[in-house]
Length: 152
Picture 1 (tube, rainbow, N blue to C red):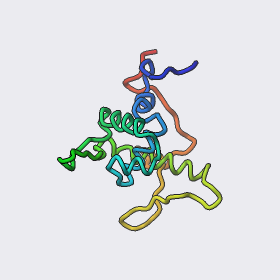
Picture 2: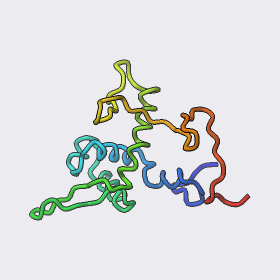
Picture 3: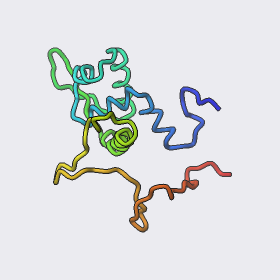
Picture 4: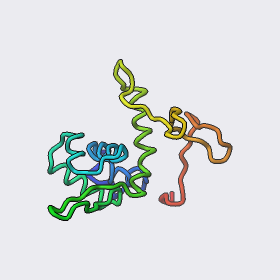
């Protein structure tokens, strides 16, 4: 089965998330916003993508509630893009993807960026933990239908 351009027929939270962040430039914009970039020119310089593409992706992230567009100058009028609470919530999945890339795709020199806890400088790792027993979950993960699943 080939997926179309949208995932409207998919009853899946992952598919819904991909509607917002599934395009590669979009996740890189979110990464840069998590790193503290806020202005169009900063994103443009960091990513090197066409201005029209950047404008489109920023607009979609604003529309989706991941970023908010905030005026910082009146004359000439200029705006910056700030992460919303929804956008800051993407920090964990972005870090998880980064750490997966570090583990499987890093160059010979190692990871290009390290995730450290600002409070104590310890390494940060992303992983799944059972809410019931507190144990880490690795390969013994089971996905079962939830309350929003289609019957049958």
